[in-house]
Length: 153
Image (cartoon, rainbow, N blue to C red):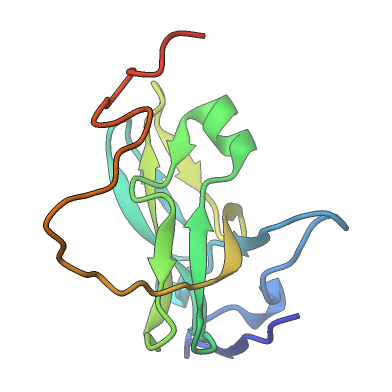
């Protein structure tokens, strides 16, 4: 188990609690919209628009890990609510406010209420590679076949 140290932003509603895993097998902890006092009525996102939704938190992610932000499947299916940079990455050296870029890909305006579960965060190990310039790449059966090159179905 990996420990993430968290601190609340000054105007955060601490009664909402920290992100939680909603089932025993959940890979992601649900993040809640946590608006400052002057914006506790939330925000409405029109179709095609996006907004930065605050969580009220700052994180200290251990070196060698990242936090990935992902959409919640129910919001995506029912309302077209997604994260345009999914999965979003929070690096281990970032200590600023944790915000979620939320986009409305649906047909109707969508209101994000204070305290609403808006995204999931997944803690994942980071493997850094060493990039090396070579004269040629090894051959594979697929070769340079790109999008759709492996067939249909």
